[in-house]
Amino acid sequence: MACRFNLPLQIVPKNPAIISRQEKYNPPPRTLLFHTKKKMSQPQLSTTSNGNRCSSSFTVKAAQTTSATEKKTADEDRMLVYVPPHPLIKHWVSVLRNEQTPCPIFKNAMAELGRLLIYEACRDWLPTVTGEIQSPMGVASVEFIDPREPVTIVPILRAGLALVEHASSILPATKTYHLGISRNEETLQPFIYLNKLPEKLPEGSRVLVVDPMLATGGTIVAALDLLGACGVAHKQIKVISAVAAPPALQKLSEKFPGLQVYTGTIDPTVNEKGFIIPGLGDAGDRSFAT
Image (cartoon, rainbow, N blue to C red):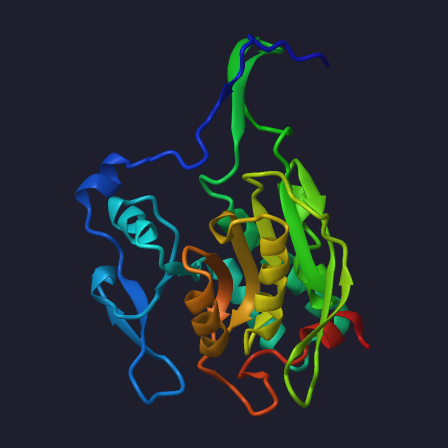
């Protein structure tokens, strides 16, 4: 069925400042913050009602908001970490944690979690166009995602493939570039064995980097460095993960201020082998039964 648009189409600003009446008069939600102190190897988690009092370089929020408080925090170039409090996200994280979860269910849970996290990450982030179409009952004003600016998706193999599996079901326009990065189990250093990124990405590209486990931070830092070489500013990147740990978040916050991370949960630590505790095991092995 043909669609008729009244041209010219209007492009909605990238980050419209939207403050609803409820947000204007209600106090901001409680924010979880990481404090770092000298002579401490791991950040300590504490709570406060005012994110501006934290001395650390990144802020952990229970949910994304568009309040003036958050905008001020973003302007300060802190890394923002979102842990959406949706019960479905908690459910799928719980399924992933269970060591008795069989491979097919684990992989499906990873995909469902990825769908929800990507949905949350794309609030007020996607470019849109407005116009008019003819419905069966009359002319309607409509708003579409702008297909001229597809979201760039960068899954990190292997486990990233499972977390990003349902991305195309909620994002109308995407381009996918794969990165293969493995970790040396002894040195914990990343090794890049596949790089399908183009030499340059268009200016202003919106990029979702998908890495299920943010443990020591070596893999995700290597991926973001590659994107930086392609001309992508880290403020245009959002990281999607199933589980994150303080070492990775601290490393990201120090090197990539302004970055945004969306994760299903934050666990307290990693062990000497670089695995998140309690975590959910090896996400790649459990997703693909290998």
